[in-house]
Length: 153
Image (cartoon, rainbow, N blue to C red):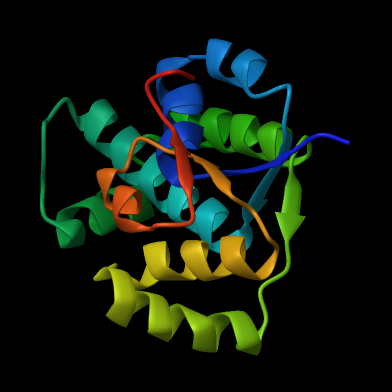
């Protein structure tokens, strides 16, 4: 049986925004899992990056980005990237998150000084016995039970 590996938002975004499909080949030896909060975060970042790219700017306030998004700025690019996200999602196992995992995430915040979304990912990994995480987020290095698959993927 393949070993489980959790795929984080940073890796999903590298695949979709930079077309780095080699990462997926490198993860094919694993039973690759994620969670709905990772998919939501990826969706949000896809929208933000697509709007900014279409506006040809490096940055803008979240209010400006929201306003431009609502006007349809970047719509075609967003839809293309969300289609890619959906395709990727259909090839992953999306793990359910319940109240028990959410409660555990509060402990992860305290223990590892993580922001809530990262803490929820760590709690999910712990609950499902996942010991490897594909990520480029350095914050996960503070988690003693996770092995980071980053630059090597």
